[in-house]
Amino acid sequence: MTVAVLDRAADLPARLPPVLRERGQREVFCGLTGIVWLHRKIQDAFFLVVGSRTCAHLLQSAAGVMVFAEPRFATAIIEERDLAGLADANEELDRVVDRLLARRPEIKLLFLVGSCPSEVIKLDLSRAASRLDAKHGETRVLNYSGSGIETTFTQGEDACLAALVPEMPAAAPGAAPSLLVVGALPDVVEDQFRRLFADLGIPAVFTLPPRRAADLPPVGTNTRFLLAQPFLGDTAAALEDRGATHLPALFPFGVDGTTAWLRAAAAAFDIAPDHFDRVVAPGRARAARAIARHRDRLAGKTIFFFPDSQLEVPLARFLANELGMVPVEVATPYLHRAHLAADLAALPAGTQLVEGQDVDRQLDRVRAYRPDLAVCGLGLANPLEAAGIATKWSIELVFTPVHGFDQAGDLAELFARPLDRRDRLAV
Ligand code: SF4
Image 1 (cartoon, rainbow, N blue to C red):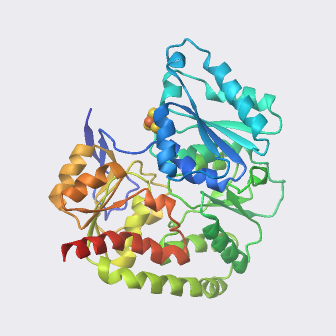
Image 2 (cartoon, helix red, strand yellow):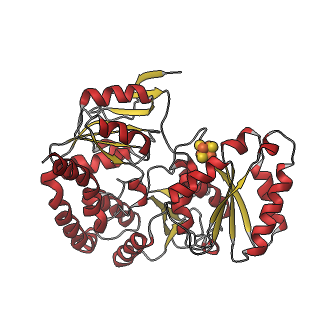
Image 3 (tube, protein in one colour):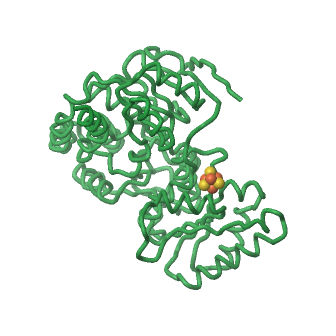
């Protein structure tokens, strides 16, 4: 079924045309993909997908590496006997988990990750997680869904982090305010931000997810949180339910985004503006120099975003305002107007936003626009390249360190490289 409606929401900046909302066929990876970066982040966690051979293949190919050490994810495959109701899937799952935890006592947090098949046979993974949690005292067992029936690929991280929020200890009443950075960042980027927060004078800084399961941060009314990613709506709502306060800001991409994001934290902790300026000045200068190297290549080039990673709006803002690119269409699976408010307000006037997907219509439009660059999922890249349109895989933007001052040049380069390659192939 195809539905396309124009939606003029009251909270959309007046400079932007109405959002085109589409509900048609989608071309996105499912939420299981998030396991590829989450398993590297929480080092004593294990992700057990309860799914089919397709799920196992997706994970193996998305991880894209041979695992030489003990792996930290696997798929408990639902066989045809389970699908036909001939076997008790719960008993089989218990057996798999018993074996896994007996062999791998270092696992402190086990996620049972739901999939399309587990949802189709209505396997209740939340009950299974409670049962197994009670049985295996040393290992916390939680569940979330990575199913492709209702998710896009970055929602897997949102579902995982939202499942962790109820596990976070309550902050002591009257505790000093603390800052929580929400969203899985590569360790190197997280460390850079920690150094900046320390230099600013913000004493208590925590991250969700933590690197180890036992280090889940405290949460309460004195928690102020920054979202590092724009796709964490459920996690943010769960944190707010526990009394935490969201600090709205641009997302930390490029000079402007990173500065505004850090400034939101500085303002919440009463850091003097001149001290803030002094602390961020070297990073701003480094980022500006690194970005400048790519401006000639990118300025004036048109870019079309297919809806995929949910990073589309902040990236379009960065590419337009700091590199002079021209976003002709910015589509995103879901438009969280509150979390994206600052980025939406900073988009160039007239930017056409699309929420959701009807892939055939989008392909018609991209062929009509003939942008210099299309940002899309892996499945669309080859046909677009064959049609003469340079592409960037949106999944790379999640696998590559792109946040903060010291990654701003690399982020710009990710968009410059396909144009470079096209030019070189043309000569
Ligand atoms: S969860 Fe669904 S969409 Fe994802 S790999 Fe498994 S079957 Fe495919």
